[in-house]
Image (cartoon, rainbow, N blue to C red; front, side, top):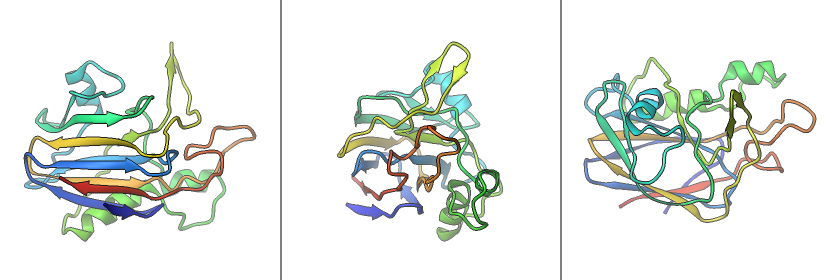
Length: 200
């Protein structure tokens, strides 16, 4: 298994038919997840198109996540997790941390996405809405709330590539609670943790 350090991002190349196993090693860590077509990074995994295709607000095993051009990209083959993954909340970015009063330069998933793709030779100009793995965002009626994580150490998810893609993973750097008593996205200690992955 390869370690993805906390607050960092990586782009993993998958050929069609390969699998990516991602393990939430310590249980509380949210991983913002994207995919772009290897041949054309302007075609990217789209949460809004995937919700239309799957009929699910929260993706589950068997679902195929598709692109902004409605092409199949990743299938969720298997997972161990007693919760749901989020498709609604935008990734953290430097504007958000500025709003929270953090110093300039705070690590964020927006920049991790761009830099991870740059590391594999892909210049992206747009950061899509991510699949927020292990992020607990229940929806009740017209209310959306970010609440404490439900992940347990060793929880995992396995993706099957339905096309040649780069999968981008960001071990979310969120380490602030914006208000007294607010839920901590990455657990009560406000401490992002590493996760582990491998290509199968």
